[in-house]
Image (tube, rainbow, N blue to C red; front, side):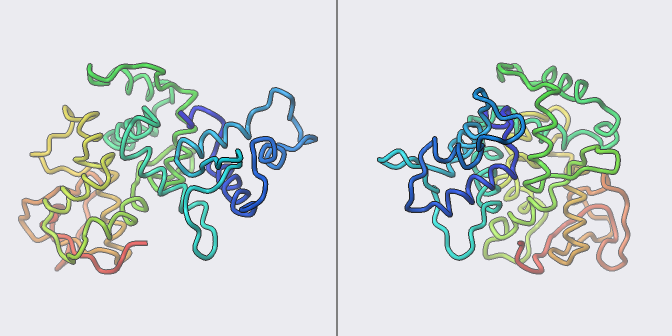
Length: 289
């Protein structure tokens, strides 16, 4: 599990940028290690393995491959300027958020945080959060290599990097998938510009399984969030309202609506558009980023 090692997103970006620049040249493990972890850096010793950790993370995310001569190469085509960050985020979504074999706890821990009231996250220690998460796991999930307080800060950094939240003024994590959801909108809407709330939620759950209704979300929080309640988590409700305010989407919330409830992110009234806390339909206004 690459999140368990010291690899952080910025260091992984450096590795990919280095391999991009070394295309067609020698880039075996020793060469890459010499570039990423050169002798003379403070704290570097014979036992230092940061470069190997970065290579392992890139390999687990399927971002690099090794050719027949033992050189590392990018496992994707570059058209125009190299966008290491975009490649890492896409790989994280496909390899980490969509399934649990590469990273056992990453998507599961996020969906657990998403289902907690924001005040409960802000007021809890890392020890309390991870203990509560592990204690509440369904019986069919084996608690091997358990989530713990040491791992959680690294997970939170990755969540912020891929657009699943941000850190408040007291360094508290706020689960807010606005950026993640905006990237998924073109796939969710497809050829449609207007979707009923239920259809939108169904498509979103299929595309973003760690969000409301997705298979990972249901696995972790089935007892807390029944789909029949049509209650959006505070994080998803905030994300939808953020995208509405930014003009990316338009939420249709008529009076007396019985659609999906956004009230966990607070009560908002916009006469003629947001006339209730429930949305019946959602319209795409412009293509997501």
